[in-house]
Length: 165
Ligand SMILES: [Zn+2]
Ligand SMILES: [Zn+2]
Ligand SMILES: [Zn+2]
Ligand SMILES: [Zn+2]
Image (cartoon, rainbow, N blue to C red; front, side, top):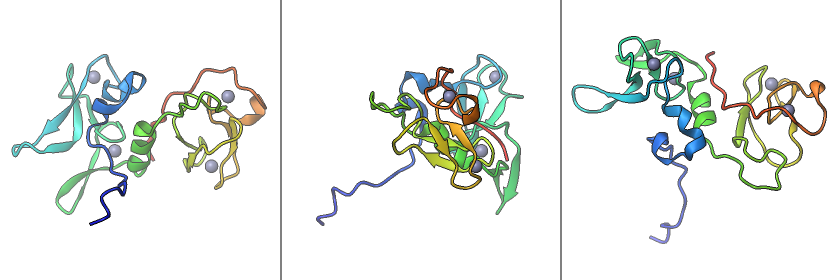
């Protein structure tokens, strides 16, 4: 119908399959060297949590934000109790900036403000950014306060952020 070329922004169901090697940590247990596996209900549908291959009874995590699984009941279904669940999921699966001329080459496209967890996208410019919400200035690469090193960053690239609110 002439609309077939429109691009829909679909959330990928299984990020572990499509992410490059450096992002493979989303399939690793945050607590031990185990691998996270999707859990299925009796009908074969994936549940909202994943289980560790080594300690499947005690290492349960939300399959989106990877927070320890502490479900809340909503409409008779278990949901992740992390209010930042979707935000963290975005941080974990978003693309990596692979433009070699970018100041923040190798960083995820999105970071969360370390102070207020506001989601921020790096558009262009230098590695020091200002949160539009709380005005905190931080480095997009190492996530430390910009006061600690204005300008070029020589600190290690901070890994993708995970947190619970
Ligand atoms: Zn584990
Ligand atoms: Zn979650
Ligand atoms: Zn902020
Ligand atoms: Zn830095």
